[in-house]
Image (cartoon, rainbow, N blue to C red; front, side, top):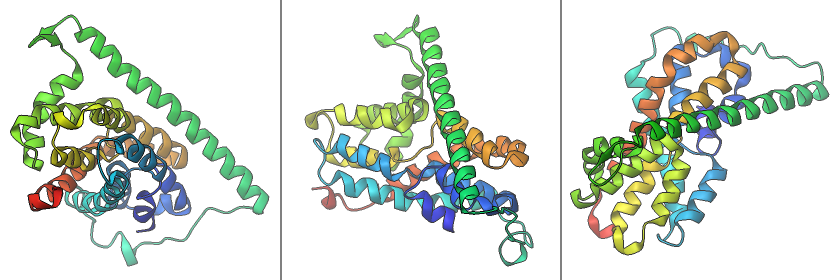
Length: 276
């Protein structure tokens, strides 16, 4: 519960640090839940950036971004429990959560915490660069192919695949192509790039309703780069469970991505009058 609450304002690796003393005690279901919620929400620092990007083209952008991260947390909990339910007798009151993390002094805690934080940051930065570079490499390989008058890219291919998904969240079919492309950008090039592209769309080329729905659908760390970040960060914090993390991370990406779509669908099901 503490990790889920922290995930609303902290990143997917910062929130596990909050409960680091108990990471080795988490059940498989609890570990997966923590991963999914981390991928379904965003950090407070990125909320400010997203609000600044969307501010010129959408009213009350900061409020929508904040609500998106809050609502996606219980959506992530729901999906995580459905995909990997808790085994009776393992978690909750039946588990032993006695902390094995001990420090010799306050200075020892500060030094070790700083070292762990630095290692996590360095690994995350390197992995993010590599994963984005791999997507760019695939796009270069596909660049020789043309389809409908433009180069084929991973984002475009996923955009066509996500068109019906965007429509199911409440986007009009006439705008589903653009919305699906934004979802493809989020999945491959991170949600930060997707928000930049969403902010570039002129007000006259996208309805206020679609822009709002896309704000909720894009507001989460569920992208391919985050897969590497999750594995790297948790491997530093809990190296003894690295194999378990590797086995769960792709399911976590699917659940985290679906959680943000569920949040957008909830907003899309509301009366159209609220978007005026």
